[in-house]
Length: 309
Image (cartoon, one colour):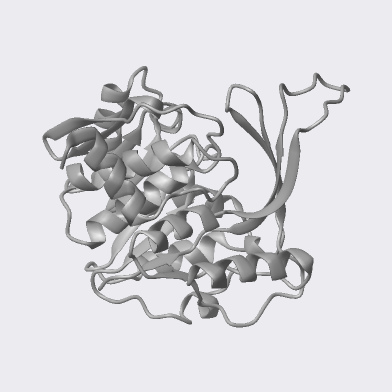
């Protein structure tokens, strides 16, 4: 069985729900607040809950937030690849969800913003494994170069999954430029794909992405409640979403990415993996919090209820 090697960042979210965000200089009362493991934890939890073994190949800190991050990973059965905590604590993110289910973030980077070549070599990548790279990692000067160098040295039979995130907005940055030819699977939402390519719609974005990426790359672009688009070579297909009552969109994209990779690792076609990922994302938005991906049985049940199979 392949495994996921996740090289992004696990941080701790301070999750709050408000009716609406305050104006600059204003204030708002939250209906709820809690500390939860977030960031890359959401992707890993989604994959692990759907039958794909996961190793965290990122740093974790010494202190209150590092303890929370490790406890959450161990509770999910995620293997912590880098054994020793860093001297500084894990970072935090304030994640605020308003009444429309949209979320806003403010993050502070801690120990997870650094990694060395020795850290990355602590768990060997094997044929068929999925190495997940987050665009956030390319923005951390204590991590980016070592990570890209390590990825470029991986054998060709290891799958490199890239999620640009909201802050990588162009193929022109030097590290992004050298990483693009090594990507096997691109996964993003539509806003990220449009910003990265400068396109005006998803179809154009997929065409432009194909010009930057290897010929056989598999691309997945999420389109909110509409589902997602998958594209590989000359084949492009829309995979419909599932109708649900959304309360919190935090973590839905991460659930989609983790479940999609888990589906591929289990031998599913891109379409079937995308349908499962759409179901997982739909269930995730019906729940409060960041790591709300369902397990495999819940995904199966929603698909059965919707399609009768």
